[in-house]
Amino acid sequence: MRIDVTSLVDGGLGNSAYLVDLGDGRGLVVDASRDLRPVRAAAAERGVRVAYAVDTHLHADFLTGAVQLAADDHAQVIASARGHREFPHVGLDDGDEVDLGGLRMRAIGTPGHTDEHLAYLLLDGQVPVGVFSGGSLIVGSAARTDLLGAERTDELTRAQYRSLQRLTSLPDDVVVWPTHGAGSFCSAPAGGRRTTTIGAERAGNPLLAAPDEDTFVAALLGSLGSYPTYFSRLSELNRRGPAVLDVAAAGRLAPLPTPAVQQLRDSGAVIVDVRPVADFSAAHIPGAISIPLRPQFATWLGWLVPPGTPLVVVRNPDQDPAEVAWQARKVGYDQLAGELSGGMSAWRGAGVATRSIPLVTAGQLPDIATGNPEILDVRQDSEFRAGHLPGARHVELGALAGRAAGLPTRPTVVMCGHGERAMGAASLLARAGRTQLAVLTGGPQDWSSATERPLASGA
Image 1 (cartoon, rainbow, N blue to C red):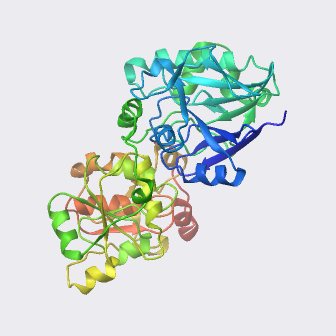
Image 2: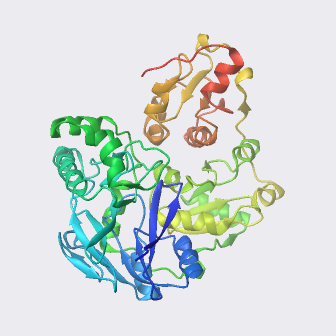
Image 3: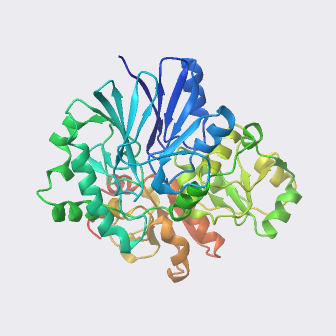
């Protein structure tokens, strides 16, 4: 039997969901997020109704779409019994099977990424075809094991080792459909491929080459970097079950006149400006946070904006409000007060104050050897170690809000790899009262090319 499995890749989160066409007008979805637009499109294209919504684990990086699928499509939710979810579902334990009508799905207990994690083996008769491995075995690596706190990390990493040994006992030709992949903060670094096979992983996954459990633990933990703060909230929200949305209304942003936006801001709402870096640089609402609308928008919204805060969006007319709304909702930001009606043109037309943060090119930087201006690099640790401007100060963007008060107050040029994260950082510093800020367009290699000077490496 030919198995029709469609990968639905969320490049911003670095994840994949999967739609399985069961061949009888029904479909099964694995690890769908609350933004179900890709699932709906794929199901409509194949003419299937989603009959099963399966989760491999309690996700930390997005809200599950399973509850919404149950409400809208009457899909049967399938998940680990050990997750103790508080909404109707079929709870499976290790070895339990579900008859899908021609295919069977067998649960495999694979703790490590989370303690209730299940992988799901898809069988055609007695023949194993593929495995939805979630956050256990992924392409070239395994998902992180430190999400439940430092006191559980060693235990879960050792469980991950045993889970991978179990999965790799499957036949070489079994396809591996992971949830986490390249770009996911849930995973250790991985390449560009999203799917693999057991044989390919057994032959080429560096973690599987570890000669023993202790070596595996050291290798996996040594590869992990920081992760967004919102990860600490979403797994519990997923256990309780996300609120069911009115889908038509959920993708809209209510228009707000300038006085209403001013009042909301003064009452504690956060202005999230999703326009490109150059537009924010030229003029923005004082106190606004710059998070340009791109595939990574949801991650940085969840990392930089406190939860439970009303949000007001500022966008350009050519930016899709539904994309803003759904990216926000899939990471649990439902308090969308609306958007500035008429955008920045309306704000300026009302004669209200604006702020600007200039952009500078690598060639415009003064001699950085003097330490004036300060160069603040907000990339991730691994990026900084690989190459940075000599003398640059390093604070990851995700940690900046908590460290802003301790930074020098001299003129500062903020930089990242392209400019988006740098402008986000500059906006946070401006929001905290800092002045004399600028943002570098481009990244370290641009500076090295412009000045013909080498980059520094290491911490």
